[in-house]
Image (cartoon, rainbow, N blue to C red; front, side, top):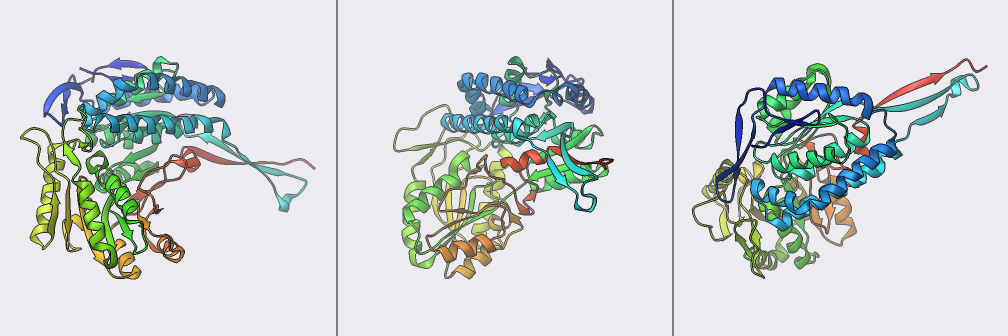
Length: 481
């Protein structure tokens, strides 16, 4: 059994209880982790609070060096970590290596920024010559990072990277189904010089461990990636202590393919954007609106590409030109997707492509493309977290943007066109935290990322992310006359 990491030590939960870790491709339990409770959270927060005294006072260049040493060790152990990801999450090995690369890139980015945090000096015209002002920026203290199952390492990195660089300490709560790669990464960071207690990992049920972290009086900052329902609950729990919260939540990202688009390029981008990681991505391309003039050409090209996917264990390579797709992470996710598909069909949608099933074992869902789904169907109103893609025919830009905005979500979006007027209109009018133009949906570490409407609050990535882990304090120095 794996153990949680508290104060630099691997320990068991106080309760002595365990949770199984299951391979979603085989449905077999291959490991277990502690089922921690509030007492374990208390211990982890106490360790982080104590470690904050030292870590927050370290020279920023030293923090950067310590982070870089850990990054180098994690890179050396890349295959081992990727294999853990495959076994617990289900994604193909190459996708797991890609996630690890993204994690390392983000951590390097924030290690670079550790020594670039600057205050502000200001003259005060109303007291000119007698006083001056400055804004100093200080780390907040203990931060909580609540991480989902779809990209366990990448989405942990978007939280611990800026937090550690800014001088904070962190308690991570990984998803129940994907704790092992997270624990291993945290161990390697400590082995290479991260002081005990700076980074802690506590496994357990979200409604127990996650809520205990969000409510803890010594946790000042909470960062979550998860469902909209979880985000609402987290904000309720964190509100009494006025904690700073960022919540990157669900999405139903629209894509508009205009009549002047490079259809092949659009199909490639949408294909990756929807079906990478078996469609388990908050920023995946989830609704596609195609202009009538190119609809038939687009659908023919899309189905040709989607038909290349084959389902199977992520540790096995697909024979070219096939593309390996792993299972969904849990049976309940597969069942929800099946219900969303059936609801759309019952309401009049037509299945234009459905891939081959994959035996009786594993939480697999065949890649599926549908058309004519009513906008009131679940596949449109809810987030579809898997390889199910609805495509719609539209007649003009106003209709396309109206339908794109007809959602409670507003995370990402994209348009495929070279018409500058359409690009400008889409950028201004699509209700989303990010719009890609002639580009697949991808979260860049250098750009702030987050949603509007029910897709969340706050931003991760970019220099702006570090600001979410700092407190600003104004200082006025007088008596100079």
